Amino acid sequence: MDLDAYVAEHGAEWRRLEQLTGRRKLDAAEVDELVSLYQRAATHLSALRSRAPEPALVGRLSHLVLAARARITGRPRPSWAAVGRFLLADLPAALYRAWPWWCAVATGFSALTGFLIWFVAGHPDTAAAFIGAEAARQLVDSGFAGYYTEFTAPTFAFHLWTHNAWLAAQCLAAGVLVVPVFWLLWQNALNIGVVGGVMISYGRADVFFGMITPHGLLELTGIHVAAGVGLRTAWAWIAPPAQLTRGRAVAEAGRSAIVVAAGLVGLFAVSALLEAFVTPAPLPVAVRVGIGATVWLAFLAYALILGRRAVRAGRGT
Image (cartoon, rainbow, N blue to C red; front, side, top):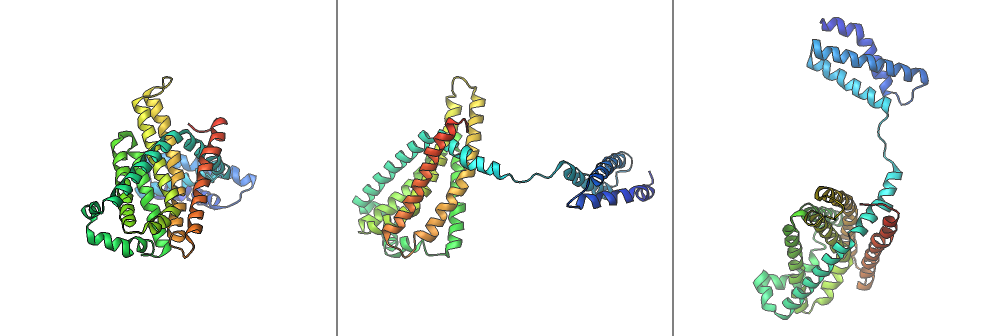
């Protein structure tokens, strides 16, 4: 095949196809012309690939054919209706179906953390064993409160968002293995228990609870949800429902976990904003805690009330 002659013969058609593909609006005649030129260009591309596979020309024509196909079939556009279904039906339904799991995780985590706080507060020497006496004094004097103002609020919020989202992703992904989820929960409970116990033992319980509550209610609930959904996936593999095969049960639990994972991205964005902007704000403690509690209760209503309605309507897995 003489490539120069082939290009000279069909180049005008390709240029016209490119022109039509790039237009925002086409009339009926131009649409017919676009379809005809697309079919010819696809034939030309097939001939070039089989007879004279010149990489540059084949690549150019492949791109043109793909662009023309997308123009004919229509480019996918975001659907606000789909976004609405996800936020008002799919996500709350997935959260509601898993609520026994994440509520159980929340109960166990809270009990363990409370015990650790009580134990460390009652035995100050244990704090020295965990972090050292000097570090404990520094934590009480400035370290704990200073953590929330060390960076600018936007930078701090972004760091918190990515950190918590990554932690939740680990819980969801490792849920089927069970042990990693409990290890991650233990690490978080130990961290809160030691810090809280140290602050209380030095008489700074007001500072600890006043600063951790505004964002901690929502943030920790997000972690509990991720862990609970991850463990629910593991249970679907260990003891699938009688009417489902093990593979089908895991697949359905996995699809639900993906929906929850997408929703947790938004939840952790909100908790990061609370921690970066509300927790260190020069507001009365009652106001800061009230803001955090209101957002937390709104999430629970979203997951449990709206979720129950969505499940009754047949949404979710």
